[in-house]
Amino acid sequence: MPKETKATQVEIYNRETKIMELLCEAKTKKYIIDYALEHWNISPQQTQNYIKKCYQNIKEESKTIRKNFLSLSLRRRETLYRKALNATDYRLALDIIKDTDKLLGHFQPEVIVNNFTQFNQLNQINAKTVEELHEKFANRLHEIGKDEQSD
Image (cartoon, rainbow, N blue to C red; front, side):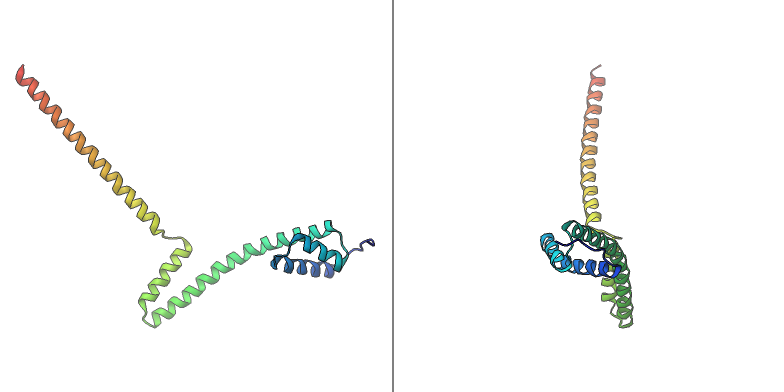
């Protein structure tokens, strides 16, 4: 293999772009290394460096995409909400509000239901405990009353 020459910025950009495409096509690392050797005559180590750089770029892009996706999703819901209100489709408007709240994580009905169920269970336990204590107390008072009568 002839000695590698230093790549220009344009060549580096084109290589990274092609490797990014290959990664998105789910090509294996071995495939990418073989591709780079055949087309650019670069070492496996240099190809690994390009792959690593591409993964870093993907990670950074995904952070931006997530933020933009949330903003875009909210904007779309707001537009649909306004159209639903203008069409006097209040049921759809309410569904859009619910969907938006779900997207933002404002309300979690399952948690509320679970907490309410647990609260009811706890109240039932407390009610039983209070009834048992009341019964024990009444029995004790009755016993005390018997003891006083026998004295």
